[in-house]
Image 1 (tube, rainbow, N blue to C red):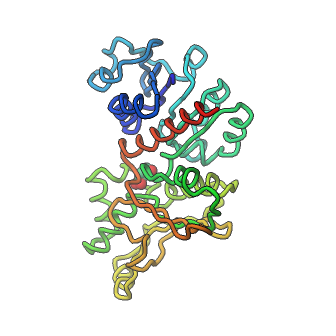
Image 2: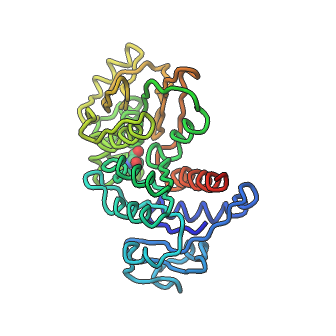
Image 3: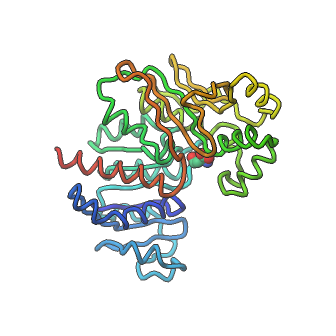
Length: 334
Ligand code: HSE
């Protein structure tokens, strides 16, 4: 498998680390050999048609000093000359226009590459367009890492719930807002103070609007709606309410009745929403801190709930790795 990686932030670096670490295991267990021919960062690229030495890229402090470094070179400039059959796209997300990820993914599919992405933007703005391009081109697009970091939601349904009908889904899809509500619940802090702690601990972004106003969770819910339920939804179809107006008093009142206030994403009867909701303290959705949770109501298996880390370089790389292995096994089975 010849791979190009676009994006070298915490997820991109996690991908390089995980592939480097798991190289022998992938060969022995799945007969999967790979080489990274290009790694594209925001400042330039590492290129080697014989395959990059991943460890040397991880070790180097000044990227521009690496022997494979090409200053300022972008993926779009290089794509025609790249000899790769799989592209991993993990550039920063933009849920308004999906760029630059959307163009990266479209160009890769048009070139005949399979694509693995954790980038929400392109999936939110162009899910059907990308799926249709893949159908026409006979390519595979996988996006397990785009929702819930390391949580295996799409693969769980595709690989182990075959034959089930998924009636509905509820979950917590944003670790930052879950952390803030947890602090407000157990430390009795204000929203502002909990947000400050989340920023100090590096959970929330410097601009945490997408986390606390619900658009990040809404994007993930759109991807779940389209990917699991076959809907054709966009962000405007989601009823979104953030957590900025949740007060310590409301949390305390809820607690007195054995309820928690959680930021719940739901897909039910064709409706999708993300909003603060009361849940029982004994609910499977009652997970704390930065944890994410997804609970599916299915006809045969009934309720299935998975809990785990919804963000993080290595956790998201785990989802990306599983997608790459799945594509390899699918190709082998053809
Ligand atoms: N900022 C997100 C969260 C992680 O707090 O869950 C990336 O989707």
